[in-house]
Length: 238
Image (cartoon, rainbow, N blue to C red):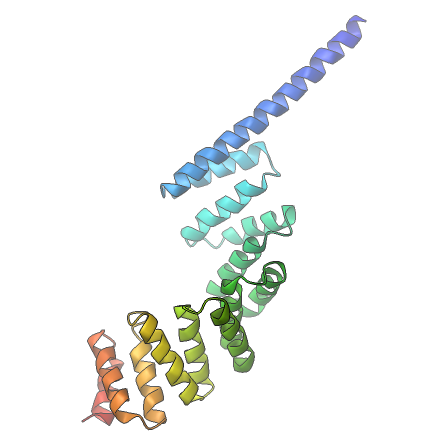
């Protein structure tokens, strides 16, 4: 009987220890989340790491540690997003963010499956279409890039980055008339979006015979500090 009682006490101790450990992991996670919002990124990573050490299957701790690393432009965030996906295969944003890191590393072909998975889980997530289209542009698959960027714009009609990227894609495809329309739309949404915006817009307009409008764009580009525009002004606008 005494032996049974000892076993009972031992089991209670084990259960209590696991509960305290889980609670401590949760506390570290909550503290890390607060520090993340306060932009104390190194401290946040330390807290999320402690939470993971105490609870190795703590999905949110991996995910938020990855987000902090993303803010710090630390490519090791990929491994944390990967672990998040292993623990939660339906976390669409984890696929998208992992793909985004691969994109910044110029691993365009490797990033595509992450954006495809994101789209399958979250069909209306415009950012996944944007990055998929951007990868395809870098891989010189211009037609399919335009399809994906157009979908991003359909989902978010004021998506400045998507208009600009589609304009660049059309420019590279030498569809200058279509590029002009998208450069103008980009400028309408945000005339300061890129220092190269009016330079490429002006060059596309030269190619479709809109010299006066092109020269106005080159001047804007030069005023914005893009020096190559000066040569275009000398060449076309004197």
